[in-house]
Image (cartoon, rainbow, N blue to C red; front, top):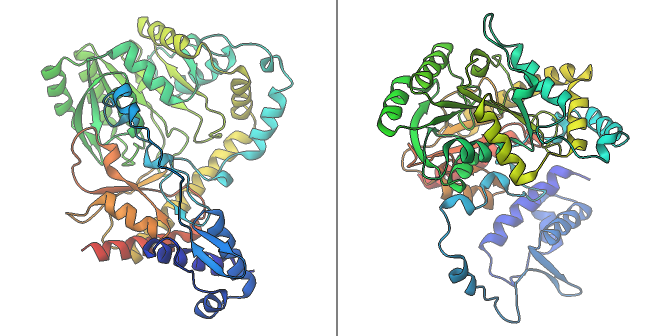
Length: 469
């Protein structure tokens, strides 16, 4: 059975169905066999996929038809409009990166690596072992398992230069993913109505967390080399902000890595203004052509609030991360986390600790990073060949994404819709801007499933762009 032929039939019929009226008759199996040069079994498999997606319905003895959605009466939820009031900004909308893709489409929108890139054997064994320990029946301390706290602190301490006081295990707070950490940091340290400097573009989840915390975002433009420290200084002076949220290493979505001199200048600026640098080191384990150098390793006076997550490199099912903070800031963040979730599952913490302390962990990281390099280069080459109008302004040296600038005047949201009708899901770039976008962009994840389909994805993107110009 030829999977490529099945995929071609499904993709072709999805485009046809998108233009057809509900109830329209789908071409017969015999016609599809002739059009695609496929066997009866291949055509039947394609029709089963379309039926499973809810796009067609078969009528025995009659044929197959485009599904027509019917309801006895339309649902009326209008009463909720008055009950809920106006939504608090765009934060209530599901991000395009969180969408679930149908099995036959090419998904370049997700924020997670493919399953085959993860240390599956280590994870499964760790979960099984954790289930046989006390962690499966007891609650964890509010700040986390001491051994896992120590691991995160040691990882950061190993990067500290001589003369800088390294963080202790107590400084590390275990949290259920960096998203929950961002929410607590913004609530505890900035507060409702407080100004927060933030790179533009930046991680959409940070924008969401800030909006839900009622924080007032102050965008600072950031390019391939990060933000201009002088702009940060001016923004601090103009707003009196308490903090600056940034991703100095392999930023999402741009892939940017700050030069050492930029990091040092930003640290000096933050200290001068008596503020916090909230350093999101989400891609610490996702290096390709450069090593991560956390700015928090250079800080020993509590100005840097540091986040590091294991979700992308261990497993999305083990949502374990850490905040490293010192002084009253640490206590306030812990109090906020405890009020919201009390503690993180000790079972998940024990499993995560087991994975990262196994001899195979470093071997996994080396293979993981090499796979990311191969996939990044493959998608770049596919774009150059089949979608030359898509401009990758900065080749990332780590992370999971390509940040692609589109020709001026391109409607990125419409492009995403057009690509989806052709079987490709991409993420419009507008979600990553805390204010007006600086141009039309899309974000493409090169770490997802089916990298062998990158050329096909680039062709779809190129064709959609050509039709829009």
